[in-house]
Length: 238
Image (cartoon, rainbow, N blue to C red; front, side, top):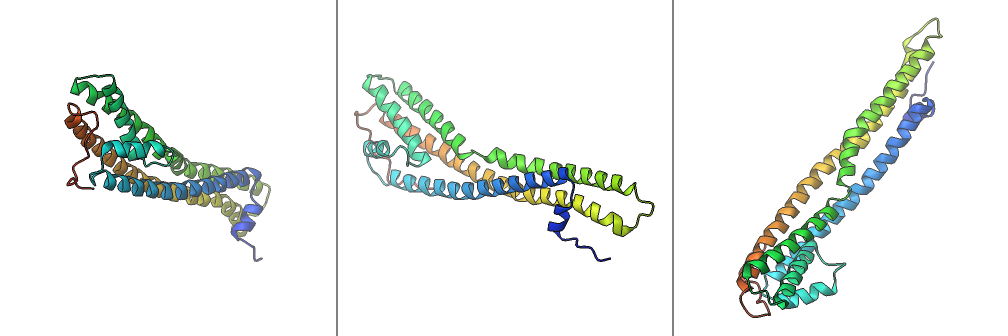
């Protein structure tokens, strides 16, 4: 007899536990793809905004003007711009207190920038652990569904006096669908996680380099007039 062994039919005739595993994996895969697309566009926007601000920063504009502009758009500013604003805010605050020591001014600004850097990285890395969990756990969840399905199939075959390949194949095929869907959920999550982790490392390096460069500028301005000068226009934008 010809049997319908399409994926839909196999899932429809699978045991309840296998169907539950498959449904969970499909929902997890859908959530994973949602995170992947959101993170893909989000990281692209972060890189673009950081590059735009860094280009403006090194164009020679006065730092006080840059700070005033950043203060007006705190919610829509680039991560690098928010780090700049936090460091500049602390620098000006300490200077208003007439703290004369350049090292104290610089250290306060650096602490503020490092704290802002950690907040920005926490936001950028959000949902990355979810992709890692999906990539590592989904194959095992699918394997559990497969083991359960095969066990259920052999228990059913134990009641038959004559067992042929035609009677064994559907039950095993139903169980193997769970493993296939587990891999379907895991593989894109692993690939996306590796890609995003590399991109986030590059963003972190860019921000850390900017903190060091901006700290050098503040150090040069620490003993000068209350209005810090502009950044050198000749500095390169990476």
